[in-house]
Length: 319
Length: 319
View 1: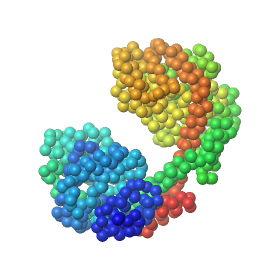
View 2: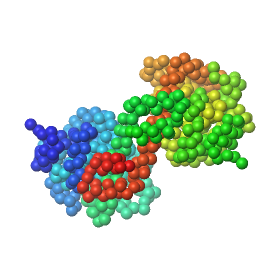
View 3: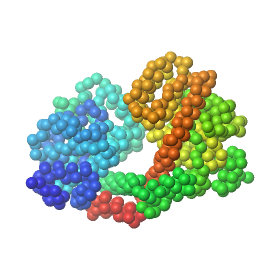
View 4: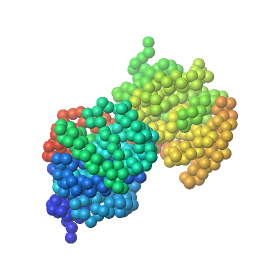
């Protein structure tokens, strides 16, 4: 029988139990006291090196992730970071129920399904986008705490959720396709914020040169860059370009290691702390809105005996 | 010389000083202690009856507002609510600077520019969307407190900001144009949340029947309705259909007065209170993030001595 206690689960996962690891991640997904208990343990170990892959549905992210994992394991690491196993988190914030995503990702990544060196987990929103902004960084820390030196996070799209998730990554790869210049242009601000590397996947299709030109123009308008995101080409289905992608990720990891990593980790910690503070305060607003004091405050406003500023001040000082 | 004290300004505005009224609204726009002082006075009087007009840029909202004001003043009121003057707030959240909007609205509404019975004010975001969610309801209360029985609020679009502003309205009119069925369809949820009345403006153009059919279908999928939003047609430039719109607004006001108004006002008060609480807590997060305790918490997380949950708990209990 599998343990329920986070300390026991952490010990089990550290000695290779995938079931224990899966349960720990379920705990951080589920929120509340369990998430806090696991976090209290997981944040005592440094985060793994995290590679984020993001891009719209249909860009071929999963196939690219699949071949990238194989290349990473064959090489035994990412530049100076050696690893014999890799953890993969798949995040689809648009899918409130996890069933489809888990099944889909598992089938697509089935080449690793029986490979002990790869741990794949789909993370579900359970209808709560804010929840994943906390759960994904926590799950990455769990992977680090049980011995993973490298982790991959696959996300869909470039909305706020992806920016949040990208902030948990050290190197973010944005996956695009030939002919997507206009779509990229529309998300320019978000892309420039998150991208460390661009990959034009399905590069055997027409329109590669135009897409590259559009991306270059977009990058020219940004900057100046200490690290200018390179634009790579790949055909994930044949593996073409995947070695080059691994090289670029290693180069970016090297770039961070040469001075930026400390600052980067501090910024990640600040984002994490801000999100937890914001979540705590949201929870407090929700609690307040269900109390008797709130109902009384509302009565006073409706009866024209006070204004919302004084009422809120009083509620918050009592709360 | 014009007063600076809110109590004096309120007295001046109540006896007809538009300069005093304008300054009071500047105070609620500017936030901080001045906004609180004005609110403490303004919330002691009931809100005016508020008609919201919303729709995309170019739908002809300003021209419609213009003719609606003329019809309202000619009739001397809105159903059972009599009024000799009307206050108009123009809100364009997409315009961070007020210059263009003020000038544009003033020119478009110039037929009332020298009419003492009409007070027109553009409200600026000053780059802070959340600010308008508080400032617009407060400005409406100021109008009520100085004697306006009816106010109009014109907003652009149907994003979160417009939903917030619409929550400050008693009757919300959504202005559309022939041929906009698809655009409406895309914003279905937002429209169904805010609309009490639909107007197909520029109804002399082709495509009225299709737009009406699209709107009807959208409404058929919603409901059941205690008040099903009617779909009207108008040509604001000629005044065609404006009397009908005024009738529909009066009918909706009557519908609310027959039982729903108390509940509606209570829901408005709750939204207002929630927004003030949320703004206070956001301010508190911002304060926290600039303190020494926050920096220490961050150091502890980076040094792997604590996790963000414990750190946040401690910060919030100290704060």
